Length: 65
Image (cartoon, rainbow, N blue to C red):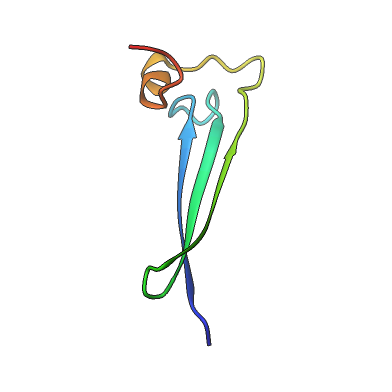
């Protein structure tokens, strides 16, 4: 049996569940020995009615500090 692992991270426009949106999702795929196999990085633009929180945009490096 082959075992693989997936490590993932998401970036959002804030932390409020009703007013925030995921804008990026990245993942790394490894085998059970943590040897790199593949990666994915998917991004999207916020929906027009989403107002990003300034701290989230600084964290995500979407604006200059």
